[in-house]
Image (cartoon, helix red, strand yellow):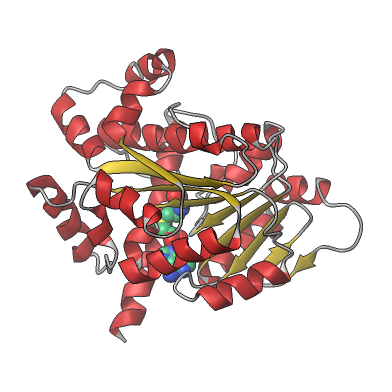
Length: 318
Ligand code: SAM
């Protein structure tokens, strides 16, 4: 059916993200010793502005995530929605920043692939086994559950299904919990993401949500970005919320969150540690500065918090 084709195209987007991250790390934009186990080949060259865009995305999201882990002294959970082939769990293990439990959710087909990679690549499985205590860890084709890392297949458009599985894998609603979504909500309708945001706000008294995705989609450049994705038959059901930074924030404030903020990636790029930005700007020559600016102005990070435990989550910023 059409909707199967659209879901299939959406699933393929996780390869795009990882292929671009693999290329950028091969050039030295940032370090990720684990991505090679999910994307074997370095693949064809990407334009410097794409690499800088991924740099800003990864550094920006990591900054907020690490701040949350510090504020909660890792006495928390992280739930990565639409995680794809993301390697954050392994970075946090190496940096001694693991939360009590790190969950990943994606379509069952993507999860099965990721589990296969984990099972067959010791550098991926070792950290999971090392952080697991007693009983045998639960492992089948569609889910893997250990003490500190859990991955399972679910559809983010089905909240009861998502909630059942999180309960089954011992998610604790009383722990401060961070939800991450990187280029995911744009694929579900505004009603579906609003239900998801409501459910998080109703279920967790202390939580943060970090969302990275497109913004300012109503101008000429934004329209071209949308056309490019649609040409690949991706169903951009959620693009409406990508109108502006205000519309990104609004959906949290209308779904029971206490605090929300959003920055476009041009702004994020300009407030990241500038010694490191200077370092990556020397990696590849870029003469089309305007193209980089335009690209960065069309992505944003939006974050929201509710903080019953008064951990200071509202102070997390750049
Ligand atoms: N977050 C990862 C990253 O940044 O590398 C992957 C991003 S990829 C662009 C989007 C991911 O969201 C894909 O892995 C896709 O399968 C997942 N996804 C999209 N819609 C979903 C849904 N309804 N339920 C579960 N996963 C979904």
